Length: 95
Image (tube, rainbow, N blue to C red; front, side, top):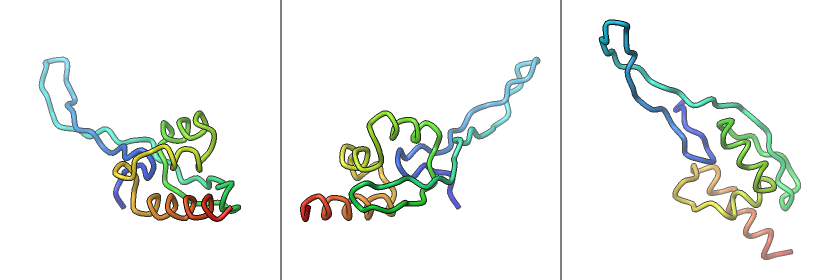
């Protein structure tokens, strides 16, 4: 399973471990991913997503999952999140 946030697209970064003697060896920085259930108000159900803690704070700041998905461009979202966004848009139109 890839270590990528489904909402923000945040993934691993590459850098160096630097020793006291200034020797550099490759290492990776992984995002802090959590399996969370976010509630969709328009769909009336919970959705399980793999989200970084940064993404989770952003969702809370914007005012919930529905607002986050509607404001975010589809290119940054995962396939599951894009499908969820389409469902939310359809339910908003129907309501």
